[in-house]
Amino acid sequence: MHRRQGTRCLSAWIALLLLLAATPLSAQTRIRPGFNLFTVQQDAQVGAQSAAEIDRTVPMAPPGLPSAYVERIGQRLAAQAPGPDYTYRFRIANLSDVNAFALPGGYIYVHRGLVEHVHTEGELAGVIAHEIAHVSLRHPTSQASKAYVTRAGIGLLGSLLGDGRQSTVGGIMNAVGGVGLNALFLKYSRNAETQADIVGAQIMARAGYGPNEMANFFAYLQRQSSSRPSLFGRFLSDHPPPANRASRVRREAQLIGATRRATPVGDLTEVQHWLRRLPPAPTLAQVTGQ
Ligand SMILES: [Zn+2]
Image (cartoon, rainbow, N blue to C red; front, side, top):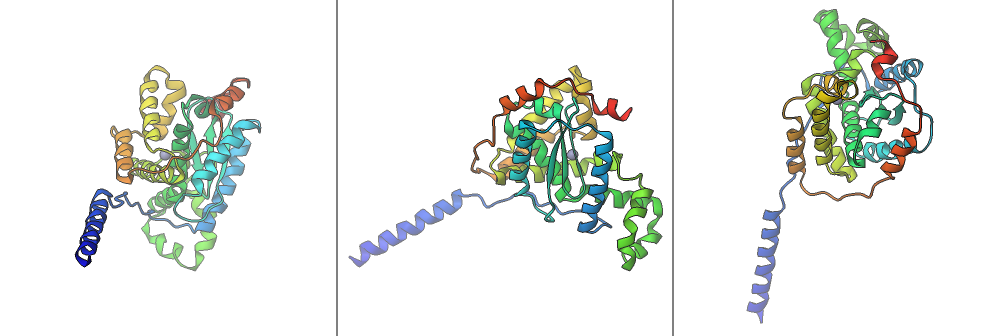
């Protein structure tokens, strides 16, 4: 009797060990935010000023089904974002080219052209997750900080990090080109893009979306960029594509392993029909005169 119990106990242990061996330990890539002269509160402050500037320059899509859809996807993803506890806001810019951008402190803009050209909710979630990752890694103000230090010289760094820190935001932003649609918030280094892809993939997985859908959309953009550069080219120039961008996301998806899939927040086809009934939208280049 005792012997039988011991055997049963041993088999239970073996089963447990086999289960542990078959379950990969999470090996997700860890990314840390870079150098930054701003505080988290200042990110929100600069973001609010920049958003006001965007409102003056860029048309927004009329409120309705698509805005509510993007907001629901955005909030599902934002709930899984690492980093500071920003108030994330999501809006659809009434622009025809396929793109998205983010401002410090959690202001995310999705172009109408992006919503019209994705094939699945997961593809749209992939681009939104990438933008959330830029914000949560504080890339906008990190980039402004680096540009400022390069311009102002390293000698100023000591005083910036001292008590005067609160009063330097305006000075830094003026020195690096203001808070509007400037390249600092639209264009990042390849390294920052890769970081946003990786963290974006991780956010997607936690929110119940398959990270491979982000990779699928990058591959689609790559295919479209040569035949329709006016609609698709800008995304790739704003987000410089390392040759292995889609494959890096697929690799991260493997590291993350199997995850649960959430049900879609809405009906993408219905949203796309709604948008296609609107008058045609301009491109960002047409709006900014670039
Ligand atoms: Zn990006």
